[in-house]
Length: 210
Image 1 (cartoon, one colour):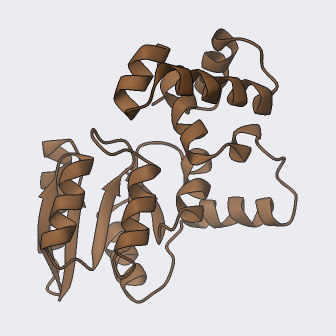
Image 2 (cartoon, rainbow, N blue to C red):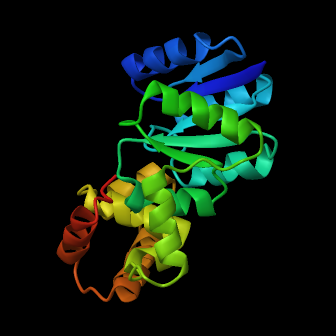
């Protein structure tokens, strides 16, 4: 029996995922979480084979949450689900240890296939994403500047893109404002930008806003 932990902050989405999982004779819902810290609590207390992880949940956030789960629970296969386009987040999710990436536009059959594939030890990507990754590997796809950011810099960029102030970001990430400002400076340098307004514009253009 495949034990599936559902992590999404939208009750309707969780209900839909629960219905899809329970309809399969070889699958069972191990638990449900509506925020990042709840995911960690359930993983510590419940046997889980596959974690269906929403990309943008309250609490512990992507990519930090994914990195923590992969390092602490290596036997758990993480299938990231998101409403964001594959070409914006999938590559980073896979690089951080996700076993697959699935947009919420995919069908229930795609989800079931993905769960079974990652349970068998495989990696699930859509044909479109597979082509995108292949193009990236052979150099046909131009490099995107934000792919050079560290996980924390990437997270700060997304929050700046959402219009958060340095102080708000510091509170949300449990950092000092000075540290956030340092990250902001590094991001500006790596992206070749000069102002926060340009950072916001960049994040919006690349659909990175948190």
